[in-house]
Length: 194
Image 1 (cartoon, one colour):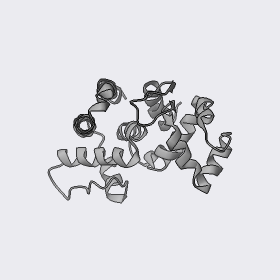
Image 2 (cartoon, one colour):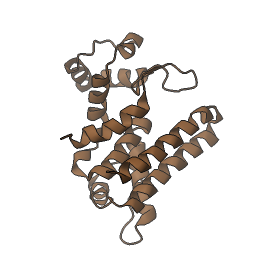
Image 3 (tube, one colour):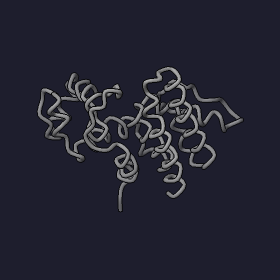
Image 4 (cartoon, helix red, strand yellow):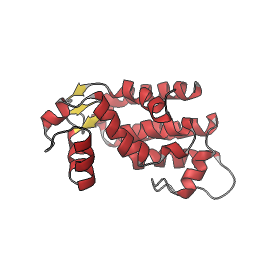
């Protein structure tokens, strides 16, 4: 039986694709969703260098590091940088999948903001969550109660709005909008089926 990370990553991996070096993509050279700047940031701290070394990734991080990255190494990076960093094993699978996929695509802080805003849009009672992008005790408790279609879809609505706002602010990113929206539509189906 697959663990929750594997279930979440199975969805995300199909959308992250292989090697890409699109000039319009701010991530630049990317493979399986891992880009050069991200890898260099990880390698800039000792814990990151140690983790990359355990994964068999040779330092210093260069374009060849990205070109030689394996799917298994990419999954390990995302398990560490997103799943474990956000402690997604402590919340139900469906909200964890929604948050994880957003963390891979838009960064962990932004993914938590989507969750916080979506939760706040649905919960009419109690104290609203701060939309600070931090998976603290209040947000984690809310996400433990967020395994409803209404809240999950509101979280995904927030993500869609983020993409639309991004394109409005940076028209050069419009080339990616259809793919981003298709990914969210597919995620809606995926979490309903879990």
